[in-house]
Image 1: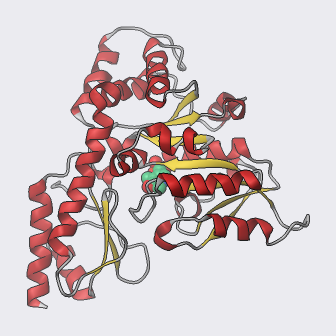
Image 2 (image 1 turned 120 degrees about the vertical axis):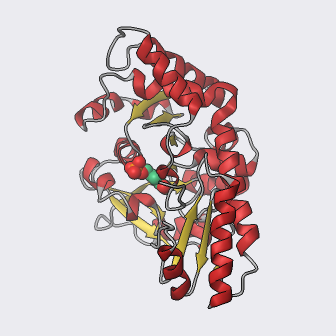
Image 3 (image 1 turned 90 degrees about the vertical axis):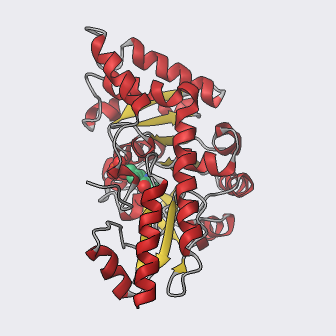
Length: 345
Ligand SMILES: *Cc1c(COP(=O)(O)O)cnc(C)c1O
């Protein structure tokens, strides 16, 4: 299949990650369930990357990472504050509620897919009686579901409000790398140094074959997390095949380079299409996605030409997502097709 823009998980495994996958395979027998040296090495390298002692776990996918992380922060009568477009709300089939035995998600509406301290304050102070699920966690997605990025200042302001209300902070970092690349900051600046307690660091969309890291900066919260991972069927017995590929991402900062490339491709697409008369860009493209409102005939024309992209936000909203391997020529071809359809329309 030719390159597409539906999701960054359409892309395969980057060569650096694949190299370590094969090395881990060629190294003979290994201890199981994460006791192996590859897993130990990756955990240590992640601690070095974040410049702090943290607890690291590996799971198969982002839904499990988010759901189990949130479950570890909540009792069943607690609530999680998140944006109405948050993946945990719209795309995890109730996983966070299921794994937390009923913790409720309370959603806020914020511009550009982001929560603000005011929204958090309003959700918390709305009620204080026992009939309302007690707010316990703020969940933020970085980069967001609409391809925007929280700045360091925005995160710090959210953390200050969270602290005031004794809330923990969870970060859905399915596209964390893209946010770091976009902001050009040290990864610690938008995580524990900004008050984040637990980060779900996405590997899959960044170029791994499979797997996400759950990183507890607040180590006390990781107590018993290993049991949650096992109980939910997320503990890989041949853990090295999930962990070792991370070495390929971490060596020479490939994770960042992959994200920078994907972000650049989104910028290129934005440059090419932003001036087309029938196209309205919906959100500032700060990471690896471009969201655009297109007239129906143009959407149909693009689909007829074989392009894949998602339409899940509002009427006519199209998401074009770039990956670590998206080629400039693919972006140019899509942009050219859009321009042509605009002319014909
Ligand atoms: C892709 C994604 C996830 C993880 O999804 P899985 O399909 O469960 O791996 C989580 N959050 C966001 C914002 C995502 O885009």
